[in-house]
Image 1 (spheres, rainbow, N blue to C red):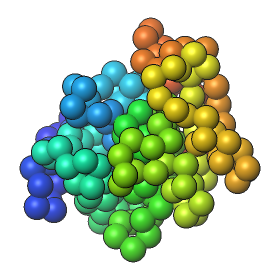
Image 2 (cartoon, rainbow, N blue to C red):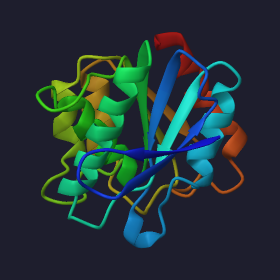
Image 3 (cartoon, helix red, strand yellow):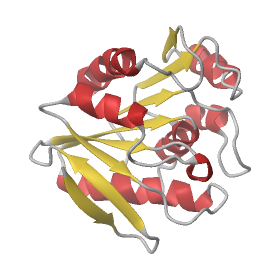
Image 4 (cartoon, rainbow, N blue to C red):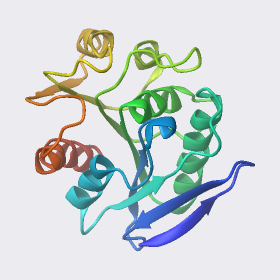
Length: 197
């Protein structure tokens, strides 16, 4: 693992797992105001599932900015990865899933990912992050993974729109936090990202 500073005007630090690869996944953490960080177990589960041949860039957001700055952080991390790797994918969990969806939809400001997987995506977190609407502007293959017992976020609009668009939807028998489900997360997300990069 290597520590990386992400340029872009905000204090954003990342951990880069397996930097020698030619393919990378940028992983967006959950809500920073609730302890979300690049050390999140769900992000690590995806990184572990991609070993040994795909890198994973797990980053921390800069200072809280109502979703605007956090999306900019993800865009900057994606651009950093795009400059250094042949293929770049995107992953996000919870708040990070909404950030990832909106980042993938922002063709004018960020590099376009080759594939996107989101875990427990909330339909709307802030006025600046409308995850369900973002799906309409995403050009790459998308996987939406939800927990069947998730009562923490409103994920149904994201699943409904992804289904209408013919994107991949997976349901796991868990709650929002996927406690004890790291292996299952890796087994679900890892193959999808591998197959589409």
